[in-house]
Image (cartoon, rainbow, N blue to C red; front, side, top):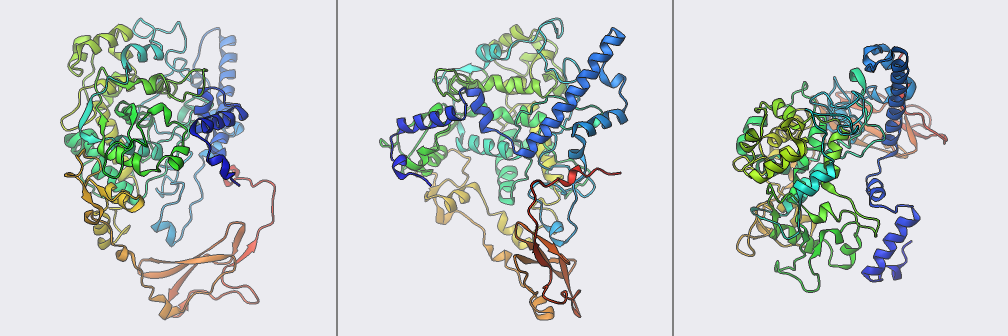
Length: 606
């Protein structure tokens, strides 16, 4: 129950309420606030804790071996694959690696599971939530197990220590709020869309373990890898990605759609989620614009510094709602990613300001995250993409046209092989028609192709939609989404393109949209077999497959199905009779309450 008087308090009082809530939950530093805001689900926590137990077990074994042999050995030198599997089982890691039980009915062949599991029939964990991020290159850890690069002061890379990430931020990445170059092609919503997609498919909460488990035993970082719904797929691959990586890289790495390929793993990679797709942080404006219906500054809703909107959802309720913010995104340019103007001070000095306890630095977080994930260095990834390795400062100048930036990088890293991949990719010169350089274009392109071609339910795949439905889906756009979900009545035809109001804006009546009549279903089985019997505390849906009509029953939460789940309509009627007595077809029975449900994954194979 909300106390409505509380909603009426002024903004400063609300800020005090937020701070009071944080103090009550003992969230007293920006670091704790970041952790709280990205707190994973319980299952993710369980996986993380299992990984921690396995890591500690291997560390103990390693110490014992080192003491007995009087020399440092990697655990894999002595531990067989079977023994590692046993350790994973005892630690609780192995059960989460077992393939899930996939439903085998008409609906499972037509619709994806919300977890993303069972998309690939041969590899049901590919692309599923709560699975490890994919590694495209072997990890780079100082101890071969879990210590990030730069962890040990005595560790040298090409004869030198790696720089502290905060030092890299201060000397290379940081820019003042005034040092902003406007993007003359794209609106600020291109930044917002990239952030949305990144969090949708590549949410990477830091687990308590940094280990890459050995010989393929992967039970560490988790990822909310939920494939986007179909309009989001279209907007992203058709309208957004070509603007980011450019037409040449799009054709090289993604190309035309040729159908589902079950040999492609669509799992999100850690190089994509922790480095390449974080290029967008360099496109964030320090000022949040709020515009009126004429796309002009509103004196009653002044523009805000970015740090003033962090954790301030109350502004949506008391300060004009969502529409002024969206108008600001549509009519205001994105920040152009310039080599000596990378991340503004709102992100490097004022991220999550709570009190006088300090703030966070997004650039340093990104650099350290890459090291925590064991990402190899910049040159390793250039080689992975078929790009020439850069050995000298002169070589760096061939991909970075700002010599001062090159000099600063070499002053800190001393050798191109030492450069953190996020920084290296960020400062490369743009490809033609792109907003990234060749390295990030390669990684983003490869990931998007994997997400598309490795998805059995991709909207263009055969038998996912009819041709009429595909025709309607192609009409959809981000501008249409805004028209249908906000009070904004005039938008650009392409929301990502920067335009001037009113000449470059169209009324929503002129923005194409989908005709949902293409999805109207006609169930002929009602005439042949009659309406299926209803089920108490449950429901059924029609489903057509291989020219046959079926009905799938399901129960409400807290009930379980007793009887046949799927009925098929034949020339003689439904293919089975309802049970006798008082039970109707697929009777749902109340399950007995239990204190704890043991996940199916815990039941190990013999």
